[in-house]
Length: 230
Image 1 (cartoon, one colour):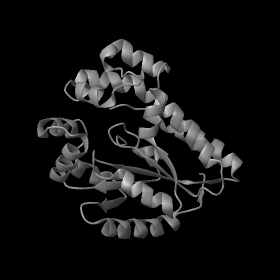
Image 2 (spheres, helix red, strand yellow):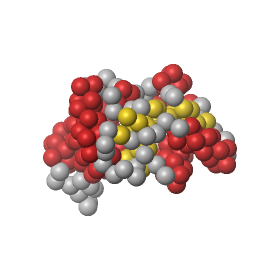
Image 3 (cartoon, rainbow, N blue to C red):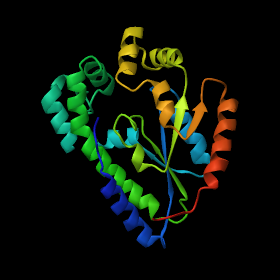
Image 4 (spheres, rainbow, N blue to C red):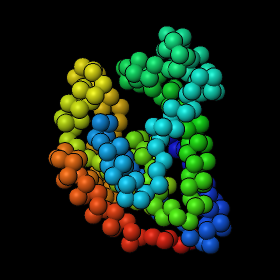
């Protein structure tokens, strides 16, 4: 798995932030889950309750905008066929390519992970230096796969059963069951991820049931801030 940031770098970053915040740092919540589990739904609920938000999916779109360094490297490797008429990368087409070829998926990760994480650190520092941001949630689909768990104070997992993941993914992306299964196979099994989570939201029921769980977790998170740098 990709080791993006060493613990010493994490410590240095937080100490830099703390120097601007009188030794207080925000609580950093990693929001993760399986594909099509409803991470955005839960994150939107947390945002309405007051959490500042960084979304890795949004960052991934920024770094592959036309003529960005990562865009040029991706096009050079995968070819002109993945470019749309507006010069954006055809993300669904690229996804189909990499989820059928593990080596190409690893290559894509090597191209995009470093610039994504650079954007993340820039955004994190901006939010962390604002004393009003007591809790910052970071929506990170591959949090555990990328070995980022030590970067967060707490981890929240959005959970649905694997079969429901497949059904939602097929409907959302208009893909076959076989393709949906391949996409799930490229991530850790969602049941394995439960072992690393401090909080679990079961998103297999109604929105009202999900929101009730999120509100309870928010109350628990409130008890953990502010945090002192150590």
